[in-house]
Amino acid sequence: MIKKVNVNTIKKHKENNEKFSVLTAYDYSTAKYLDEAGIDIVLIGDSLAMVALGYETTHSVGVEEMKIFTRAVARGVQRAMVVTDMPFLSYHTDISSAVKNCGEMIKLGANAVKIEGFSDYILDVIKRLVETGIPVMGHLGFTPQFLNTLGGYKIQGKTQEAADEILKQAKELEKAGVFSIVLEMVPQESAKYITENLSVPTISCGAGKYCDAQVLVSDDVFGKFSDFKPKFARKYGDMKSLILNCAKQFDEDVKSGKFPSAEEIF
Image (cartoon, rainbow, N blue to C red; front, top):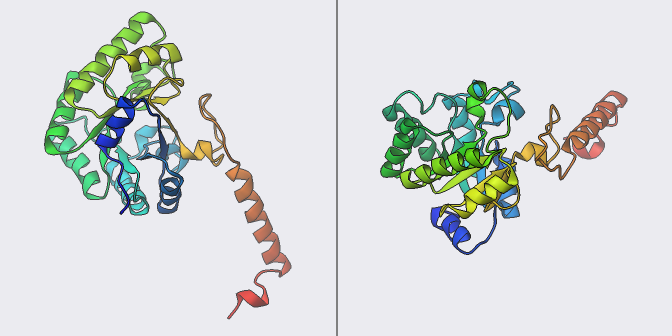
């Protein structure tokens, strides 16, 4: 019996000062490989809007698309915790529709959802979700769904006052019931300060090494997505070159008659 990662597992990592890992996945096979590799949380990030669907921002992906990817990823995972990033406008209009949309992801195999931002309304949504039995991962600092109101891709929490504000928001999310909080594009010193003053784990997305976990977009890690590379993303492979080379060789073999061979026909 494979022991499934859950909210209690993540809580214990924080208590025992143990790091844990988070990577995104958008399809069955990638999710399966991440799970086999030992990744603790597999996130169906709304980043798929850009890296999988070719949109310019995360705003363009909707609930129905996230359902498709959630179903596929959940099928590939046995051990890791599966978290679905709730897309723009899927939880913003009213609490009833927020619970319904998040609940659909749980029905499709997600173990939790991720909610961006902070406001009194967001706190009410989180409380209702947790009361309903849906674990919630929070997201503070730079929040891509608020790109337009933030005025671009800007680092958050650069001053002590700004760090204090993020910490204040994080504590409110904590009270509302989140089991973890992503800190995105926050200076390392600020993230360390915030992490040390919370009981729930923090997950760094470009927030330095002192958070309890690290998350990256898998297409950045694998070197598959090449339109742009965030400063905080480390490239561990070169899938772009691998795919290009394989496709070119296939093209050449087809046109020269080398494919299929005698062993590859009926």
